[in-house]
Image 1: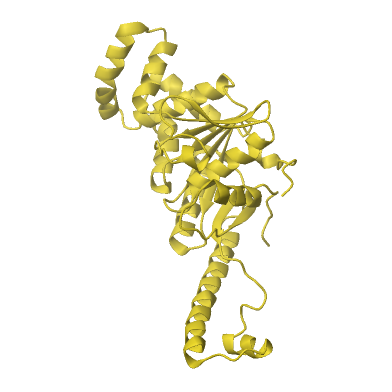
Image 2: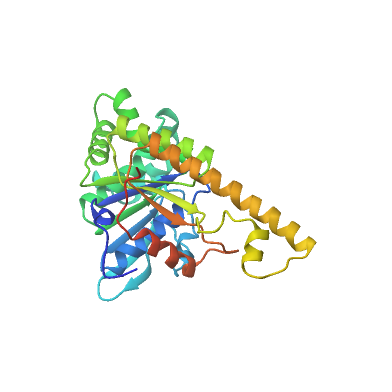
Length: 319
């Protein structure tokens, strides 16, 4: 990949929320996205909502926590900063924003958040989103990438603002909900990046999540990322016996049996992948990027480079 080119979709919004079913690689996609932008000189803030400390080492830095830290730097300006946003810290920051300072703020945030959250479902999510909204409004980074909770929790997380709009008529909570909802519905300020793998359950969930976010929240969706795709190479449909004969190789009975099992496994996987990609084309009319499966016992910075190179392209519209 030419590292001198950044696809337009990467920085088309100030905030990118990356979400997908647990296990599909949404966290690694978020890290790869940060890598693409930072290499081109962008100041990137990577926020882990669930507080996954592994994001830091994945990018060659220290584990991340509530305190912001630089994970990686490129040239004079490009860098990736990482942090988590615990709800209690977001609440304390909110009180500070409202002019409540010092010791009283610490006491108020410690004593009242649990009670407020219990009485107001979705409040903790709203506080985190409200902090992200403030960071975007303050232009705290050129690009803020949010590693959202897994798909089953991503929708309630992102819907928290609209849910509270339905039950809170006025006051600071309503104002915060309105401002967060406004950010989520503004394509220049925020977009969603959904991640899946070509398997039935993840595909079902990403389709449901996409319609939920776009229709109910008005969240603009970037290209669909289909992760861990098996490479469809020419000749894979040939039987091991025929391939060996073509190459002038004689197989033992044991080798032939082992290769037949392996070939059948590969055939079934490829057929299943084609079927799920076809379902995505039919059910989810989004441009998409297909990322390769990266076989490794431990996914680290070197593998992340491979993923970033595959991600840094213009998406295609399947036909």
